Length: 410
Ligand SMILES: Cc1cc2nc3c(=O)[nH]c(=O)nc-3n(C[C@H](O)[C@H](O)[C@H](O)COP(=O)(O)OP(=O)(O)OC[C@H]3O[C@@H](n4cnc5c(N)ncnc54)[C@H](O)[C@@H]3O)c2cc1C
Image 1 (tube, rainbow, N blue to C red):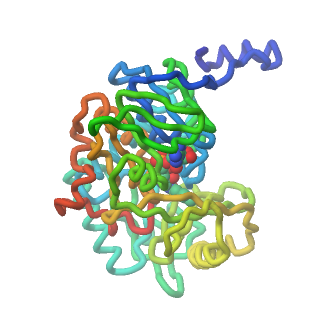
Image 2: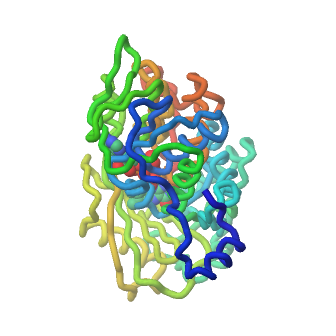
């Protein structure tokens, strides 16, 4: 695979850019692989990448029923931050943020990471207390974040209305290192790097059953036939329940739709990302996000009541957007656990590993999650980043409760 560089662009310009090779190969599946990853979202692709890069395991297939990045990875609003409350969360999200900071160079692919700063507005006294608690926890964890005054919020976001009629702004949790990245580019960058290592990305191929013998995984049935493997990693977000059923066990997980919309393009009017969890909406320039549906479902579409609910919240916070036209609305199927923390775990089936439960906030975690999952799969035991995220914590009562710190969402 040729490297992308200024010189490569200049060279291609001489031949009208006709000489670029495909970013990743489209092979037919082999009969057997050392490792199969199900799901070519960001987490599945990152797992494959770090299996190759950190552990030298390259005989890997990533099997995707649709197109790579077409699940939640290509549908999210790209918020990246690491100021979560509990120690295991702060560790994995901050590892991810550190990897994001150098990801474009590492992958030789511009993932457009933009650390423009991220604000979570405090609009109730309960939120003020919650965010102050997070700041203190983050100080102990070595994760940089701060609590700022309404005046500082106004300075950072001149278009904001800090004296809203229902919920005036009382302050904000601010992480200057947080921001956004380009979601498709993250998936494409990892895919290209995996393909360059000789891994097979097999799209348009659905896994329909998991085959095992004597309690150990042997491979998967797919719409292109049986494919054998020594180890199986399942990273399918909202479809984790179905895949777990195929593997013979149940997961404490629910699938719901989470929606977002985007406005017509406008000139830059906001340099930071703002989340308003009380009124339930968040915005970064023209990307706008709302909440989850209140019922389990598998739709990837938007719905009218969410447009109304989310825009009402945001017009109150940013009155100038009231005359903006909305362009598109969509949904993704997110995978929610009871404590709002992920599962990166061995399972009751030997050599079968699951990574799921990232819910409404897993884009920011992609590099850290892939790193931790690759270590788990390569060694057969979790490393320090993954050890608290076992699926058995729900039996043992060792929850990693992020329902307050994660707020709505991201
Ligand atoms: C509207 C919305 C906004 C969001 N905003 C943010 C945000 O701002 N910040 C943030 O951090 N997170 C956000 N998220 C969450 C984030 O997108 C997800 O947590 C993350 O992308 C999950 O990635 P993944 O790789 O686990 O799943 P996915 O990207 O969904 O990938 C799973 C893949 O598995 C495939 N698959 C499923 N079943 C099978 C099968 N049987 N065989 C083969 N393949 C299969 C699917 O087709 C899919 O491509 C948002 C999500 C949504 C929907």
